[in-house]
Image (cartoon, rainbow, N blue to C red):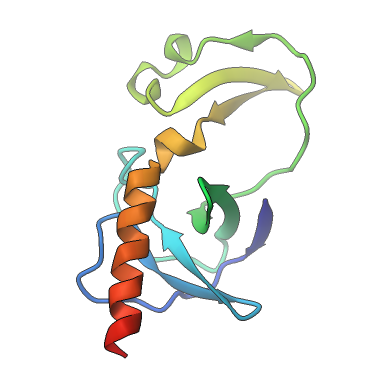
Length: 133
């Protein structure tokens, strides 16, 4: 995982729903995924205060725009609550909730939040775009 400052991705026409655009990170073109739809949030432009988290889903590297990053930490064996008790509407994406410094931490299942078949659809779309240029 890598966290970088917000940047404006290259917008591509008629792409899959989750594709926000492409971002050049040190010469590697990485698809930017809009997970706001998955989380029942309205789509919005990327703000300068946002952060981009680069993660691996299946064998693909993707970038996710997030509103904020407070800290990056490794959670220990703190008590973990069932996600459906806290956020039942997001139960399909959240595997558990934990506590860290008196804050609730949601633990997402990245492959449910961004299903591999959606990433494959994006990859196929990007290959088509590349062949056309």
